[in-house]
Length: 216
Image 1 (cartoon, rainbow, N blue to C red):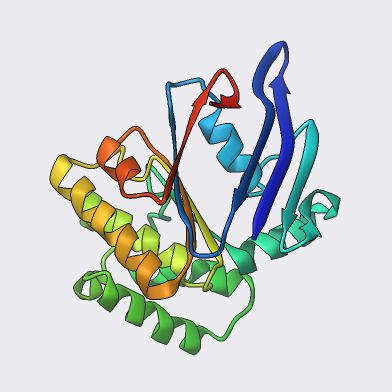
Image 2: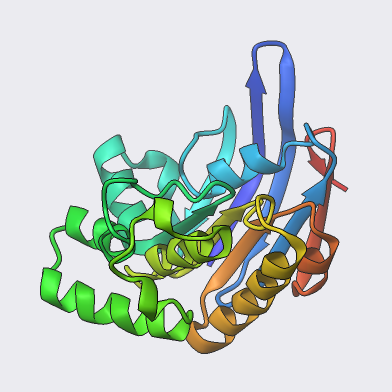
């Protein structure tokens, strides 16, 4: 489904990615591990079209994403990709439900339909009782579940997660690990997760280990 070939990226004199190639199949769960500075997050951002490589190709179902302009990329991300970050990035002035449907509102989908879909995800994620609470009123685990609902709300084909359990205690981290398995099983969505959490890495179909900008 997603094929990155010979991806390289440098920031000044620092070579962050060095000729990296990876393929991701539909419904596959992949973890990316390695020491800090290995290039994990940069690779994730390029795979998710949040950054562009200095060289290489990036194909999604045979569409060359590196030929799209900014507007086309934004539309592509909104329709095909979900993101989950370590610190949630929920908008503080909006409720949990409003945060979850925000990507759909941006793409001008019907709000009533979005709310109905989001409520189903909230029920699946066991946070339906928190839909009208703002992020400041949620626990860390609840915020991350809302972030998962937001990632799911546009029915993406792939979700990228950057240290999703890095800001959680061990209990909530374990629950999130189980949640990722449930999401993949229920919705057949590919997931690529950068993590230092050994338990989370161990549940993946494949684990890619990075060092010095390469997959080793």
